[in-house]
Length: 298
Image 1 (tube, helix red, strand yellow):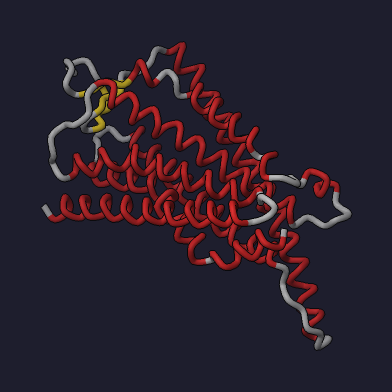
Image 2: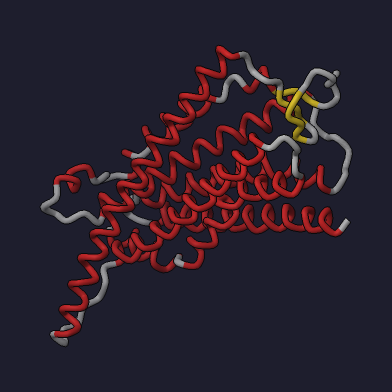
């Protein structure tokens, strides 16, 4: 009884905090983006990341919260297909957008003599083709879910993998071996790019730290450029993403090899799925002044 109550409160808290936080971040950067004379790529990426997080929270979190409170099924067959499809697409978009954010920030802080500097987006509109690709690619990867998801209102005697209101019909082996490699390839490529860009930023920040120590020892006044300070924020954001992503994968693996379904592990895994979308805006809000300063300096 106590665990059920905690489950309800945790889901409700994560959805409320995450949704309000992402809405705040989105509105803040929309206003900054429209008011600035030059449209900043980082603004646009952060807006897209916040929008993606809101979709994930609403699509994944709301049905779970309603189910946790024991309310009646409000989703029909079409509703289930839409909700689950949007949730899967949003998860893919979160990976792609987070990777793009890290790569663009790494390019922004790269030295002027570096070859990476030539790849720096001079306009926010240069980012839009990446968003179009992300949406198209993730929508196509998840298209099979439209035929694999059904509501509990139908005959469910032959269905597997209960998700409270929506059930997942196991796909054919042919579809599985098409979709699974694409998902693994997507995660590997974008997380590899994220890891490489993060490592490059750590290297640049270390060099900057050594320079600061030298200038301080020389009693010279030196202020850290805003774009380097925001790189620290992006690295913190990516650290949160990597932690929640791989912890989620670990719990998913435990569930897949477990012979008996553990409700506690299932609930923890569901919370981890929403964790990055819920807490990433808090990182941005906490360091909002640094982000705004970076965007102005660009």
